[in-house]
Image: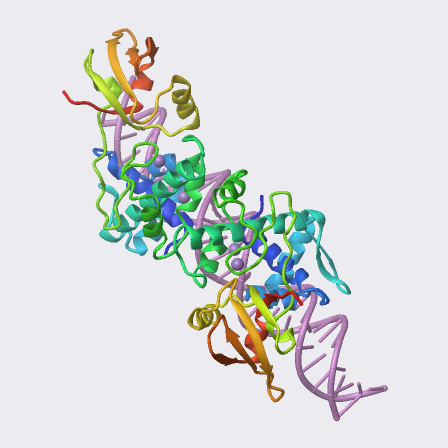
Length: 220
Length: 220
DNA sequence: TTATATAATTAGACAAGACTAATTTTATAA
DNA sequence: TTATAAAATTAGTCTTGTCTAATTATATAA
Ligand SMILES: [Mn+2]
Ligand SMILES: [Mn+2]
Ligand SMILES: [Mn+2]
Ligand SMILES: [Mn+2]
């Protein structure tokens, strides 16, 4: 088993590896975790030593098979606990991330699987992120943002890209959650603002940043 | 908030303070936690510094009001999680202690209270230990052991004093759990062995050590 | 291509929490 | 009361995970 810090690094590296296309550098990891780059370099050495990652100055950091397997299990635990906190304990979706950040490190062979069963095998967490299965398979995740859509398109909110409290609370205020139907009415060329209608409500205008923070599911 | 180690020490000291009559020495704490006495002395200094305990060489260690308040909350979290693990996730009563030992350190202002509500405000944990209320009040705990009873007495198993896996598994095998009715039929003077009948079963003989590890509730 | 900014790395320090190996106190028993 | 055992304490070390400051390497822009 690995320490809490090692697990947090693995998870950060896993997350960066999902945002494909870019090199996973010490700086990138340092940005995700808020740690000093010097500390990151230390930990990289430790994780290479334990064969959880490879590090090549040219290619950056990559999870080994072992590292990948572990990272996925940590993410699984995190997301399952988030479902538990929201559905069973009645927390709001902007409160659960921080608590799950601790719960994910509880170690027991059967805990995640029991929790999974207790929650009736949810496929997505409250932010719309896929919950890896016990066998390591990960359900489909969404990648098209609201801002990507063509004018006129009707979509379903599938996930949020930003899990900060400020963003999630803003969504609560706008009455937007996972599953909400949104129609993109107009894109303002000047600054990328989006005119949308939420559910069956009147038109609202949101920023480009907002539109890029919501992942959607759409038929056409 | 306090570190995991500090919390474990507080809990150990709290536990020792419940077994009244005896002085809480570095040695005693070291025995409970399995730590080196030198480490215990270090931590005592730290906790005195943080005003969670008092230490007087003559009187031993004592929790301050602050320390007591914190210890009770940690115990509350531990026992609530134990109920959750047993009742909701289907663990057996010899498996839950180790996991709760980690879960008790998860910090969030409302977590314990939400869990308490979700579990419908249980008064006792799966080992029969009282679960402190949110306000710090602790339900009655039992103190009479099976070995204390007079021959012929019928009692109800209220709690176990020993939460080791070996003991709890032995109880499972004997079909004894919290609430089981036991009649003490005979005490063997030679070695304190007890002849008992469990529920409506035939007679069994158990050791004195066994009898001293079960706390009972009895009317007469 | 050379200057400059950014990133990576090294060196050295620190706090927490544990340990071992003395040493000093205190308790117990002859 | 004195010898011996047990407990408490001190001194010094170690590991983990972090940091700052200095240095080296790399990328970028004039
Ligand atoms: Mn975490
Ligand atoms: Mn999430
Ligand atoms: Mn604990
Ligand atoms: Mn218990």
